[in-house]
Length: 316
Figure 1 (cartoon, rainbow, N blue to C red):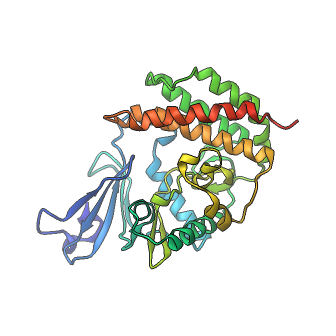
Figure 2: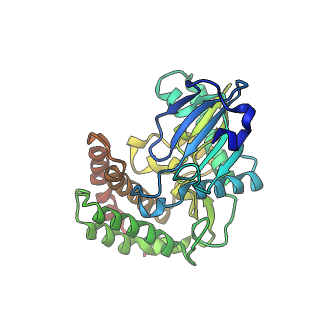
Figure 3: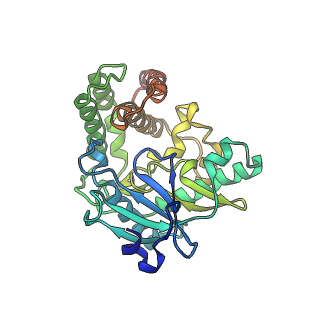
């Protein structure tokens, strides 16, 4: 794989050239040291026969498409892709090599208390600003970047919910509630989705742990595989509006340039939190988690979220 990507002269001559990066939940990633000492990152998708969620099929190809869009249409810093191999000739999966970014993971450094508070605040605001720039990309349809697309956001988002519930049924996942209760909440609140008329590029998974920081500046945004065309309010940085366990969104929102949400925007954001939490619960079965920590947290958050829909009915 290294030879195909960097040439014969860069193939390492020892056995200790690869170190797995273990905090990701989907692709496997390695930090590689090439023969000349240069470092690179290798990402490998799950093999074709591994069960994944419906919207996770060919996600690496989606990530490459997303990175191309970001490079072509924004100044948001992302790693350089050195080589992508989608042939599945060497391994039974897509993979690509990308630039190694010599910086701290923003989320991990923050959680470990290695960054001063003023750097954390400024980094959160910068993430919001960068996320707004990413959302400036306008697509030809709603839904997956590479298609097939939907004519409306209501249709595209409803499919995301239904696909996730179908995945849960297939794997016999107990989400702590009847699946039809989730469907009923979607049907009741779906009219607010029609307010979204422009399909904007959204990362969905832009958490602090998917960014790198150096000298107080965000120097790279990582992991673009879940990007779609949709509503910017679905971005992860807004999640704390309804679910405080996901962090205070104040700095992110200030950087983004958005203040108090309207009643209908709040309902849209709540629907997006619903998709995220149900996905979190369902995917624990597909990821093969060995303990119930993430599952229990997801069920707890769903119990906190669901009453909020009846407390704030759809504006008429």
